[in-house]
Amino acid sequence: MRRIASLAALLLASAAQADEIWISNEKDNTLSVIDTATLEVTRTIPTGERPRGITFSHDHSRLYICASDSDAVQVMDPVSGEILFDLPSGEDPEQFVLHPDDRHLWIANEDDAVTTVVDVETRRVVAQVDVGIEPEGMAVSPDGATVVTTSETTNMAHWIDTATQQIYANTLVESRPRHAEFVKHGTELWVSSEIGGSITVFDTATRAEKARITFAIPDIHADRIQPVGFELTADESLAFVALGPANHVAVVNAETYEVEDYILVGRRVWHMAFDGDKSRLFTTNGISGDVTVIDVARRKALKTIKVGRFPWGAAFRPTP
Image (tube, rainbow, N blue to C red; front, side, top):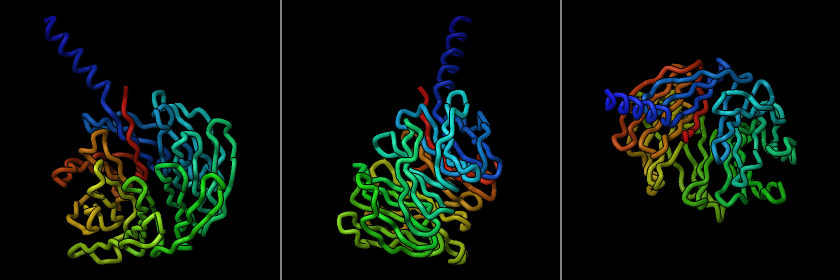
């Protein structure tokens, strides 16, 4: 009996230490928390109106939430689920990036055509940078020297010097850029264009276009192939790209820029997050209101997890 009790205690301890994937549900004004061991939703937490972008502080002790229709970035204690306070953010914050200094949030304000910089310690706006119309995508270089904002209607990536808080370059991309990431130790910038149906790869040293990745899925019209979020594997050899209403995730060779595979997921896939060892990928499927779990090595969907209405953002949280 003592051995059984010890085993039960060990199993409970293991369950308590399971990592988590956090999902923002923009139509429910909630977050869904998924246990990465059981692949079940363990908590549903209320937020402000229309939560979209979410990201954790570097030590994962705080969660930042773009509550778009509340015109605020909310700061949550992920242990208790309590919203600690709101940060000023400008109107309609959609996406943001946390600077490597763990102190400054760079926020895209879609309605104002600005990028707002907020000091999370003083809780004050320290700068606003005029950018193109309908900014959404945000990326920060690994060294923190450059932030990029993408503007959906202007069809540009705006390169901002974080020291001067000034734009130093603008580069054209295809129609409706939605997401951006610095990859390969900051030597490349990738920008997805939803209506253009492509990802543009820039050489960050010259800001010249290096490659353009396009997609084609049998029996799916090109108009439905709309790349939005993407994530790269730990060694950055592969990129997984959410293709919106095409209901697939593309697998792209990040060296050759060729598409190697397509994985069927839920309806209108928006964004995604890896688990801790990047062996599984969790996609947010807006229309079907669920999350698809992908086995990265096998490139296969493992499970569908029901969450709230219109899941949008995703973020990984390790637990102590």
